[in-house]
Image (cartoon, rainbow over all chains, first blue to last red):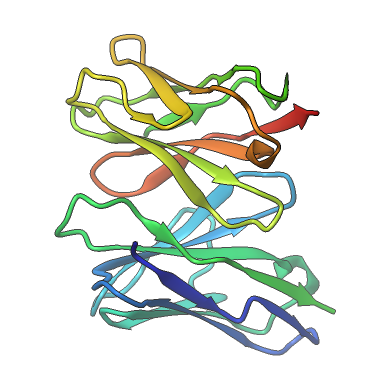
Length: 116
Length: 112
């Protein structure tokens, strides 16, 4: 089946640093990628949708200057948390799909981000 | 905007028994997909089952089946012969033209 690789799985860093999370589709072309945030014991909250070669579309309330998303190729999207602070600590999950097919989204395994 | 509601925050079932998880949704779209995802403690999102709205026949995947009532906008998941490995958070999700919308989740516990 389709595989999405998300890296790193866990990151701990100091407040003020920027953190980049990568999401790769390994065996299909991801025309659209999605970034979610999940708080403990809560559901997934969509942060933004990115289409290859276009600017990401952010959901209401998500700061685009804080969460930079790049989707430069059909197999890679990155989320950069800029100047991270403790309140940015969370579980981030990406997903990808080929919008030209009727296949569902495929999820990465998530990244647990801890800001000290 | 589309919404998905799971009214059961927690459910429990005895091993080998059957359990049904509820989900309702609201939409004005006519063409859409519905999903159930399982999220075990590892936090991987695992697709359990998918239903296309235009299909009247309920989807089944081994021990998992759905009861899709389009007019009532209801999409429940039935797990038969529950196993210890079924313990997880279960999310109902709706996908229309664009994004996937998740319900709040139901935590399922399997009692041995």
